[in-house]
Image (cartoon, rainbow, N blue to C red; front, side, top):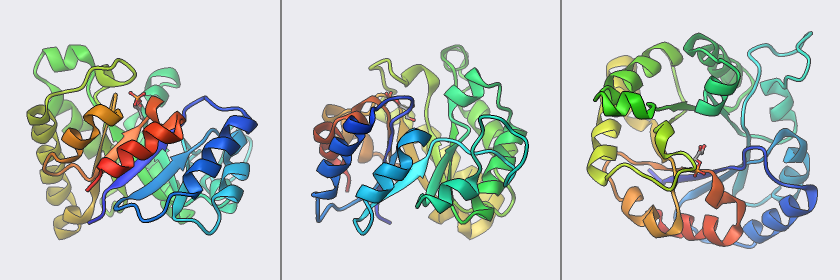
Length: 242
Ligand code: 13P
C-alpha cells in the first residue's frame, strides 16, 4: 500500500501563501507516496483549483455531521466534496479540545464524510498525563471503539497530543507499539478490511525525522502540521515516504 503524506495547514495561510504553496506542490511528479493537503475552509476553493488534474488531493480539516441546516459557522461534508475535496480530517485533538468534540460526534462526522463520498481521516491520541500513566494504548483503543462506525472505511491518524507542535516525538518503538494496537483494534472491528486501513503517524513530523518514523512497521504515512506549510519541508517528508 502506498503511504499517504497529508498536510494539515490548520488556521494558517493567506490567499497568496496558499497559491505559492499549491504551485510548488503541483510541479512535483513521480513521488512514491500519495499527497494530500488540508487548507482552512477559506482557501480550499483556490487550492483545489490550482491542484486540479494533479496527483495532489485536497481535503477539509473538519465537517459537520449534517448535510445542511441551521448551524452557523459550520461546513458540511457535501460542501467540501462540491469544492473538489476527496478527504476530511475528523476528531483532531484541537477540535476535541477547543470545541469539546466527543467520540460520538466524531463518529457522526465520519458517517457524514462517507455519505458525501469523502475519505475520513480519524485522529486519535493520548495526552501527556495519559502517556505518563502508561494509558496510551487504552486511550487510543477507547477512542477507536467509540469513534469508528462498524463498517469504517477510511484512514486513522495516531497523533499523541504531547507531540503536536512541540518538536517532541515518541520513539520508533513507542510508535510501533501503538500502531500495532491500532491495527489489532481495526482487525477486531472490521475483520480483514481492517488490514487495508492506512494508519498515519502525526506529531512533529519534520524532514529530519520523517524517514525514521515512516519506516516503522504499520506506519502508513504521516499527518503533518507545521512542516506542511513550506513546500520544501513538506516535499522532503514526502520523499522520505516508502
Ligand atoms: P505538527 O506537525 O505541527 O506537530 O502538527 C501535527 C498535527 O496536529 C497534524 O494534524
